Image (cartoon, rainbow, N blue to C red; front, side, top):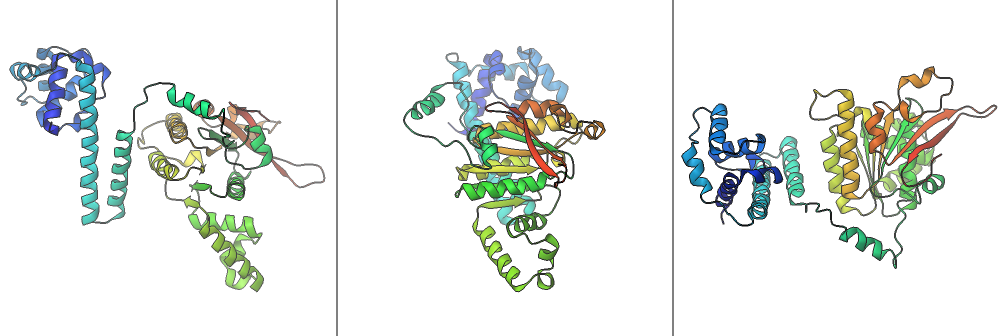
Length: 398
């Protein structure tokens, strides 16, 4: 059956039994014919409208010059399938949806081939991700897959997660596990980025095949690379920036060796991805190619959403929800840094609490683990930075 015939059959089934529209995924943009799109738009977005008279009236309210009429709707509906209408319609819609995104990818690829700009490349990547999403099997709620995995664990030892710092792994029940959104909050200047660098270094050290994607949103990639180099060599950032004049011959050799190490390791630093959907697409694509994967985002407050009109708490809710869904879908751990409210500075007890997270409701709800970095001075000693786990769905706190 040709795609246009599939689309007309879906339309016939919906006009024959409009009630099934509530049980299927519908988008008029998937349909080729303009009149078909008008009818689908009304059926999909006007719950309660079922008669051909009501559908005709709703279409004409949108387009007074539309050729849609009761006679036309009746003629289309006469080709509807009476038996297994819902199941057959779902199958056809799935095919129509995939064909739509395949067409978008074909057109985006052609545009990029003819004009290979960064914008066209980005649109081609979006089309690839949209097609992947459309082709992903639907979640039918069956327990078979989970029970098969648990059955395997009766005889096969499974990974406890990516290894990091010993105490942190112990608190998390063995390591950084798939499906975990780990949020770490701190006030500015406490050392979120430094902790992120140290965490990435430790994961690379203890998991030889690990892939790390580090999204840093408040500095350039080069500045972030300099932090990694300083962490490994102890050479100050200023000296690295002016290495010709401010480093010894031995330090130059040390730096060159560190550069070689970083090039050979599976770590990527992204400093131009600010929109949550871009970040999600990048992580989804890279996680698929790397079984031992960790994403680190520094930090939540700098991530944007496509709808700029949303209030701050709505933006945070959208971001944390999408990141949480991503950890489940791709079975990866994700570390998300977040700033704390200024109110903590006015308290006598400076140790952070869950309520100190900015727009904390969705952050606390969507995160598997919530921890806080804070610094305390010990008498006669240097200031020490602590990580305090305040929420942990699958392990200890503290």
